[in-house]
Amino acid sequence: MLVGPAGSGKTTLAGRFFDDREILSSDRYREMISGDEADQSVTGPAFARLHRDLERRLNGSGTAVVDATNLRPGARRELLNRARAAKVPAVAIALDLPPEVVRARNDGRDGRVVDAAVVSRHLAELRSELDSKRIESEGFDAVYVIRDPDALESLVILRSSGPAR
Image 1: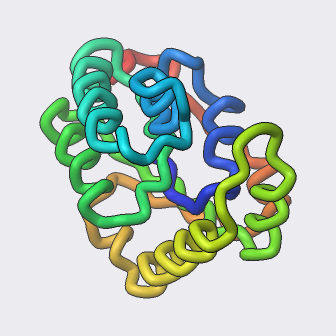
Image 2: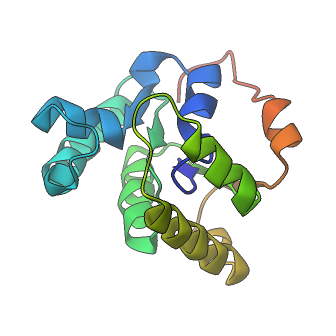
């Protein structure tokens, strides 16, 4: 799963390394349900559908990446529990880029720009989660924290050529 504030590059990262059918995007699920990816009023139904599709994906063909902020422990726990039930490894990739980089990326987005106050809240939530080492203690098979924009741009993800599981 990807973890990070709006504007940190989660969707771009997912698109670089994963096939579209492997990416479960909360924004895409909101758009499917309401026609508007920014419609927070459909977050509950959007995540219910995302969770069902995640279970199907993990129990079937294997690889899935959840493209959502995943800043709260409960959100991560829901995803982690599904990976455990399917007996597949769970990996968290947290994008902890400098706040000025995140804000600039958000402001420069094509399409929907997230309100600056929401981005500030996301940055604070991520800082709290990482400083407390909560994510590292939640039971992931691996947790990667990317802090440098250059490291994000040069990131390489090696994928097994073996069975999907």
